[in-house]
Length: 79
Image (cartoon, rainbow, N blue to C red):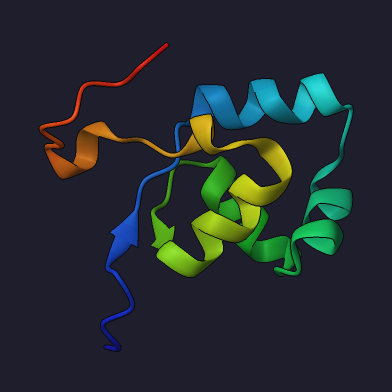
């Protein structure tokens, strides 16, 4: 396995909320983000993805979709 910054977790709730807010379909998101439809489906169902994929999705949906808790960040989240 390539070490590409490891796997990232995406918040299913925030992912779904962002898609609803932007009124975007899975197909539309896949197209805009440059990832496959299958990737969007997998992430939507709670599977982790590469950092590269997470960043592509976050570029469209917003970085709040990325779960910070998974990294034991010492930085507190600013809301």
